[in-house]
Length: 113
Length: 260
Image 1 (cartoon, rainbow over the protein chains, first blue to last red):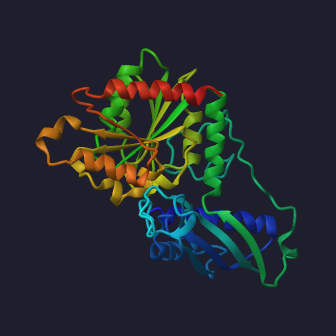
Image 2 (cartoon, rainbow over the protein chains, first blue to last red):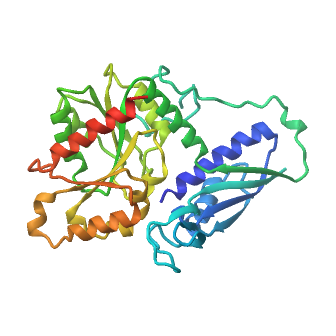
Image 3 (cartoon, rainbow over the protein chains, first blue to last red):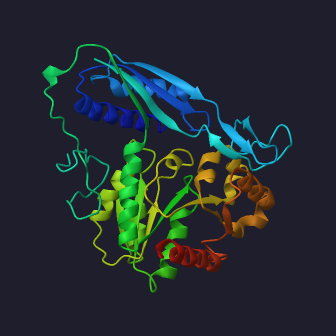
């Protein structure tokens, strides 16, 4: 249940950015979350609402864009979509693929007033 | 409230003395008056890691460890893996060669830290309360409250949890995951993130192997499927089996980590 901590980290960033960028309210928060980032999207939505209550982001809409995890198969020399750290290549059955995308979780952009 | 960095000390750390450690707590204070703020919708592109702040503290911790030649290890496992018993055994074997300290993470109680202190090694307890993992900022505060001087090896025993601690860098040189054979051989596939993030897997309670239907070869195979670079050692805190190799790993890794 580290989604609660993640939302607390998001709130800290919103508060810090409010000072740097001079805004008083956050209307939208857009996150990009990799499918291998180990984040439960529904838990994230629930925690976001709880954490943002009575803050500058109380009214904020949360948009989450999921980023499909990709790996590089050295054998086939191509990128493939994967759903776990231990998927094998669907074309050549190679194991130990190199995950190149889908482990990150980022605050992509904010809409503020 | 910690006046220097503005954090809520609460239950996060027991001790809050400021401020001798290496991290600087940068604060950004706007020079602009809020009344000048625009009332228009604005879009701000951040593209910032959600855990950027934690990663920043972790890097500061890492710099501190490097400067002070401290070899720091982050121990991860599910509750009941025998992590504390293994740590106590390790401390007893190392305490004449190394200057040791332990940071203990638990949601409640200081029982584990009390057990560690019985070995004569200093232990700082962090109670995370509702938190299911340790964060780099809490570690920074724990480091500054350590009394032990000229530390050479620091063990961080993370909160017993095979999920959340994987995401939070603490500044350690290596992550070590402890899995006891009473937990079943499929844990690496069920909780791949922690095994993927780890550098070493200690398969603990190996003395129970004759009494359990635990497929050791399968467990090792699963762990390497998730993380081909993972080093794996079988140990028993109770009988001492495999501990010599574990100490060899520690000594060799310490040398590598503190060379430069």
